[in-house]
Length: 241
Image 1 (tube, rainbow, N blue to C red):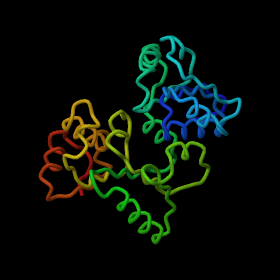
Image 2 (cartoon, rainbow, N blue to C red):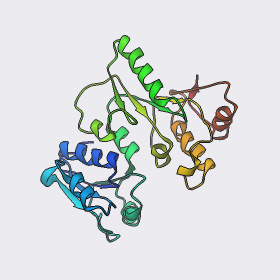
Image 3 (tube, rainbow, N blue to C red):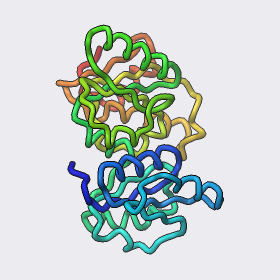
Image 4 (cartoon, helix red, strand yellow):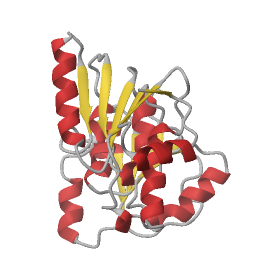
């Protein structure tokens, strides 16, 4: 997607949302950044050094038709205040993306997505070392690594993108399609982060293999009964390793 002068709204201005605003502005887009923070200090700090006149900042509720005429809308899990306007725009045919879906949509190299209750960061670091030793150039995004917006304006060429994926990041995704999905493990640890509790947590984790097909790969722990059962219930189509 060519982003120069595209009119894009970013809904939710936590750390990752701000990084997406920054990445879009650096890529030449005209950005409307919509956040819900009441703190004047946070608002001032958020706006410092991001985008200049390419970014319009909105901190209050908006009318449902405010995003008509936009080229796209990107939302995160902290964007609830703006869902009415988002959904109205979507009904009018305006493309709407979760933050994960949008960032991976603009990437040029295949993705390796890594999720699980435990071990994501360790696995990311191990894979990076293995791939570097094999002469491959990889980016590292999510968790303790680069923020998601860093990939939007990144002009470096990579062989693969390594992505650390939390359940809340996966929950809103509809289009994410990694070439290799890695599902490390699932423990009943983060159900409280999802409205549906533990079933919502499991559903979110299953998003990592929702779209890959037989030409893609799903790497998982064969001895973990709950992982195998989730894969069976959700009818994973990827080649299992």
